[in-house]
Image (cartoon, rainbow, N blue to C red):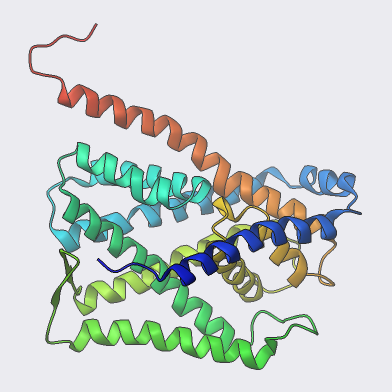
Length: 318
């Protein structure tokens, strides 16, 4: 098994540490003169129907994301019924968002699926297909938005609109390459480090692209709903794309601080800072905390069912 060169490993550690220091520092500089009464008033001003619509969008997004594991069921052919897959996937997604991919996306998924009888290679393929689905949708959406020059970047940023368009073209090329390979490749299977890698059919790949992109679009719809109508939805979606990849690079759970820093920076001059903060606090409450609270209850139920199923026949519960 190959490992990272010690120099690269050290560089990555230094870079991660630098982000951990830089993001809170930048956020502090942005918020040091913030009037928090303005934020509180903006939060109190949300109508109940707006919040209920936000909850409905979140429910659609989590349902769609949970269906990524149904694609994994189709891809691997495992026998678990949908009624077991969907709640498991929901729990993993909620924990993934709040506590990092290693906790929710990996460790929890292996634990829950293995207790239902799936072997490690099958779980790995489900996990891998879900990751590809999520990031394939990201590549298509972000690439398209960046190619069209979204979001508008403040003057002085080194990358500029031309650089953003070039990045978008690269993202689209990567996504198109995956879809093309799934459609025309004659060799469909490989062995990588003892794991069997099999290309999905082109129909399944297209479904991955549609579902992945739709879920990112729903996430951005929650933020857009909570902001006043000044900037169009595509620009808000593009900013979410940038903040999400920044959160992945920094390895900060839930992108805490990263999301806020990116949105405040890129929306400067479009909205009052307090308005942006209120929208992001509402977004975190609706999209992160509320599902996590529900997922904790569902997880306890799954553990209880698994413990009951593993109890020897004839042993009574006391």
